[in-house]
Image 1 (cartoon, helix red, strand yellow):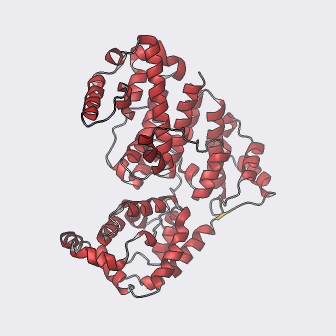
Image 2 (cartoon, rainbow, N blue to C red):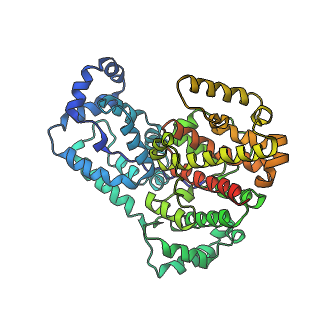
Length: 448
């Protein structure tokens, strides 16, 4: 059975670009970069078009129109990447726009599949059809084009009337969608689905793919119910999650592009069995659906001042920071209780003890205060520590039940953790994986 099309909606915030006058002044100091970028015809054309509209009020209208894309997940990632670049570098912005693979692949890879592309790309497809990304596009029409794209995309989603919820839930089950998602095995009845729909206040139902929207929404509710009601690392929950999050049990050889290319990452997730229907919603609807399913964001615990800035960077970083600190305390407490305070000398995988000692030595040489050795652990250390044969048998099996489930959890978190650590951006797919696996880890640790 072929996978449903992926939704990747792009968002450009012209307002985050530097003032054109400042860009021209900065360009004088960036002659070498300009020469390199001249090789890219799209950049040259963009600069010429920006110069053309410099004195025109259309830029103001374009900013106002394009700001309406704020609710689009992948477009928001592009905007945030722009904000992270040198604020005086117009060419850097242009290069990011031209070379961003999400844009180029979204606009070119599906040229022969117009209908699928239109369904998957939302407003980005309408912008392409309108010619916004052609080298000779009339930028004075940007506001009009953006408005048309927004209208086309927003027209796809609506909030069903309260009275419709029961009928939609019954239709969904009657059309056998439930069997594809194994909803009957997870206890998500038509009534429960109806009640969840009735709590929604954000437009979420795709009128062009109504049953697919309901299937994705129902699957989010199924995942939430499973995580809430089943033991965190038993086989039943692990098998339930694989139906939509994919099978991550086998060791993975991570390709570099998975961490830097959002489209490549999406393809990678789908290749493992990730169901894109569960994240195929506008951002507000997706977030609200997670909250209704019990997968809402959890408030961060107080942390020391050194970590405060990291917590503020974004919600994903806060979630990962919290669970990492919880894991460190959990591992240290239980291994100290079982083997004494010098457990790192005897209970770490090969090479890890020396690595921690070296990082501790370097930190203290530069004036850092003395900290427990486990504070120098990496996120990739935790699964090997938990699953080391003697540690697992004597301590951690009681908490986590099956080693393969532990390894699967940490593999799902690996791309998210790496991107957040390097100030790269994550998608709604990543957010769902993060919320589910963080919740499982916390539940396993705190329920015992």
